[in-house]
Length: 161
Image (cartoon, rainbow, N blue to C red):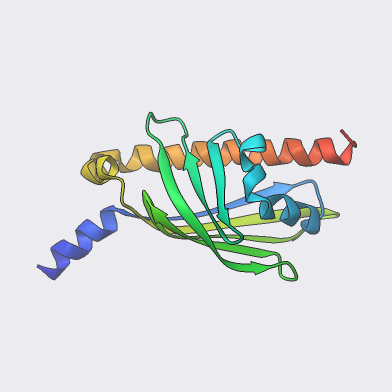
C-alpha cells in the first residue's frame, strides 16, 4: 500500500531545472527578477501579479494549454549578495521555486531556475498520468517565453530604450 501511495504522490510532483544565459551583468538580471510585480510586462505567460504585503502576493499563470494556475507566493529567501531569490507557493501548485543568478562569460549571466512542486489543481491531478508529458511541455513553453522576454528587456535597457 505504501508503494501505491508513493507512486500517486510522484505523479503530482514536478521538479524543474532551467538555465537562461543572458546578455547582462548578474546584478542587472537579479534586479529584474527581484521585481515580481513587473513580470507580466516581460513574461507573457505570467498574466497577473498582485502584492499582498512586502513578502507575499498572488500570481496567475497561463501557458500554451487552456488552463490557468493561481498561487500565493511568499518570499522565503532574498539574498542580493549571492543573488538568490526563493519563494514558497500555495494554491494550484505547492512547493518552492528559486532563482540563482551567477556570472557567465564576459559580462553576461546565467539565471538558474529550480522548482519543486506538487500539483493541487483538481483537473491536473485527475489527468496526472496521461497529461504529464503535456504539462512538462507546457512548462518548457512558459520558460522559453520568459527567457525571450527577459532577454529582450535586458537588451532594450542596454541600448537605453
